[in-house]
Image (cartoon, rainbow, N blue to C red; front, side):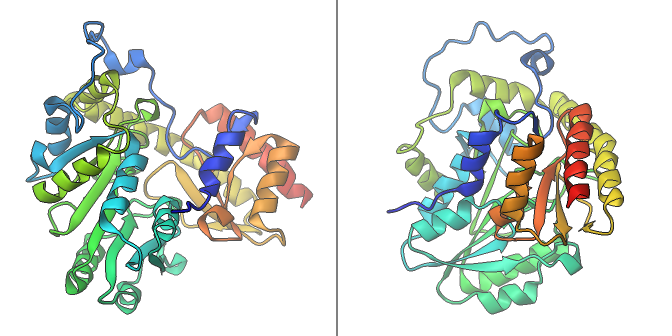
Length: 366
């Protein structure tokens, strides 16, 4: 199998520690270890191998996030990226068809193509506030459709699907016997209202993936998970035996601490506070360039997808802002959408203002 280059991840890995201001991140300012523990003691943790699918304590905490789930439904992974990787490997074979929501984090798209699957794009509609048209999905699926891959809340747009849309998608999947892979890593990072609904419990042939990197501000723990029915979870676990074996003991222990109900509530409230306080900074930037920039304001996640009308390719725009202003953004090309840029607004507010000021200087020059 020959893997396609994961352009966005490779580019960020090369440049995010070289530029002066990084606006390419899609999460909020990470918690410190002291912030997380707040008096909890972990120095007695023995650094042995943990159970390969996660400790009972952590899987119980994760299962509590999904009504009707129990620990047998859960497999802990090394980040959501591993969860998506294992899910795709377990569900797709060469010659299968996969329908992937677009724009999207390009991992599933690239991996499915590398496996020899035929990949079709379910395009989100900007005129529908970046929602999918379920009629489009009905036209895309066939008896060969093995997988429908979604990201909700969505990366890069920050859009959130309605429950009616989610239920209709489940009906379409059921009509052809397809699996749904629902990446829900931004669940809990909503700016307003309750936590968005999960796909879990609405459909049998389903794998939900998520983790602590985005909504929880704990990317350094590298903790993700897969939730599925017990038979599917057992199969997913068997694939994990060939990847990272297990998360680290400390990550497992600290993740269980983070997901204690009261502590989890405080962490998500912190995330919401960061998002609601800092989104106006980005909104002012868009307003300043309203003759050339437009957007659908995000409903969740520390990211926004901005359309521009300057006559410059998005990768070239990204390169010039990086090289001339030492600011890192994500070009729309990295999501197969030229004419857009993704900007993260969840990290330090002063750096956000300074970075956007530099980007404004560059755009004024255009």
